Image 1: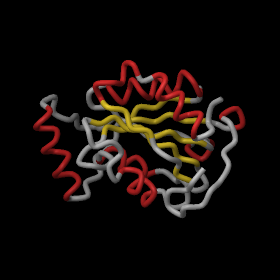
Image 2: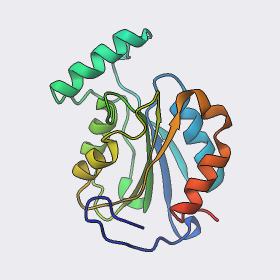
Image 3: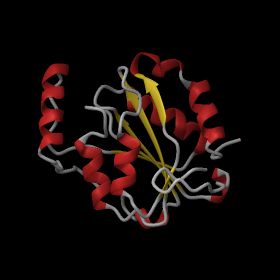
Length: 176
């Protein structure tokens, strides 16, 4: 696998040899759907990133808030954190692509945990911007981790994305 931050190629063992966490932030439920599809295939623990203060249900208001958070480098308070992050070898991190990158709650979660020597597999849902700058931004937050090639699924296609998810997991050598 190619480390997105260094460009080095590294082989990845299959998921049987690893302790796995599938962590995600989902505003509309689309990212939750993909997280559940991944979890069904690779197992491990499932963790939803939830903020203390909820986002508006209105899409335009949420976009407005997301832009403001990005501009001010906001790190919203989280309702809970992953316990014992050190015990995981492989961390899937899922999110909607907001403003071409990861949402502030994901940045908040990643900045609070020690990702040293972790393998991180990013996945996102989107409305047309695919991964945007999110993989680069995750690599910047997790500089001592191996960040794998990400998966982007259009929000309108999440319910039928099982084949795409399976193909990606095989490609990054996490499942057979």
